[in-house]
Length: 366
Ligand SMILES: NC(=O)c1ccc[n+]([C@@H]2O[C@H](COP(=O)([O-])OP(=O)(O)OC[C@H]3O[C@@H](n4cnc5c(N)ncnc54)[C@H](O)[C@@H]3O)[C@@H](O)[C@H]2O)c1
Ligand SMILES: [Zn+2]
Image (tube, rainbow, N blue to C red):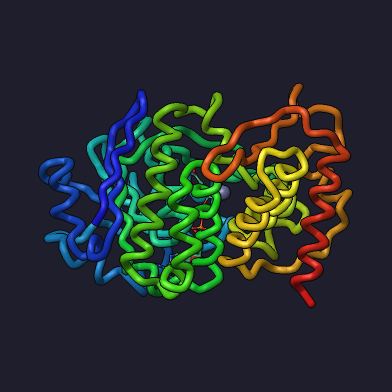
């Protein structure tokens, strides 16, 4: 098991990654909070509960009150938060109650936000069960929900007391979800951890076969990377922006496909390909580095096809306009294991990068 300390101006907590955490949850939580409070709640989804609920409950003398969120972005809403908060109130939740968010990134984001809002903030714990949630969304304190007008438009910073990422729970994760989540680890390596890049290149087989040791290595390194960045820039005023590598074009792809055909990590995978092209053109990475890093993205693919016009994708990045809030920001890798933010990407450069990506997507299809 690996323990990674997260320290920000507003919170200090541990992320634990390893096998067997789920079945020993209660004593592990008691080590942090002392005796468990009178009311403990677990927010999860019916399918995760059916798979892992028994395991979750194994170490609790008294079963936490289970709350259920229906699956999908469609239910990552204020309406769900209200419904859940009312269920908690009816079940006697007070300021001292504890909430455990047990599921993927959606459960984590809604659970964190619910905990931030309920009685102006109660403590919560993250038990992420998707690779994406284990390497990315459960760490850093961002919580929130969607509006019809856009994703994650309402939210709050609220750090958990601890994160328990049990690798065993990944055994039931669909292959596609696993690969999509791994794109965030590929991102982590490219922007800040050369040795993670090397490990993911050398051990793709083991990682994709879900070898526990290999996954633990990848998860811990990804969390360590994010913890390091969040430590230096909790509220995304500077450095934290590098976590958006691959996300400018990635978000545009998600938007253009109405969040239906691509998983987030898959969109980020293609977004990284576009950003790598841009970096190569600018010379922040060499041709050899470009080939290596693009190869790494495909190693953890396959990425779904894209049937989109370049102009549509470029427009989705805001890149067809002169400015977005004064500046158009883009994260570019600098060599392997470092990255910087540039603000002067021209519409022509962006267009070329998107065209390259779409051409690669076309080739991969045949
Ligand atoms: N807060 C942050 O910093 C942050 C960062 C990145 C992403 N996010 C958010 O995370 C969300 C995406 O998270 P996600 O990719 O985990 O998606 P998700 O929560 O929808 O989970 C994906 C699917 O896997 C299923 N699942 C979860 N665990 C499983 C398991 N162990 N076995 C079998 N099936 C399982 C879920 O029921 C779901 O159908 C998005 O809403 C995104 O905005 C937040
Ligand atoms: Zn992401």
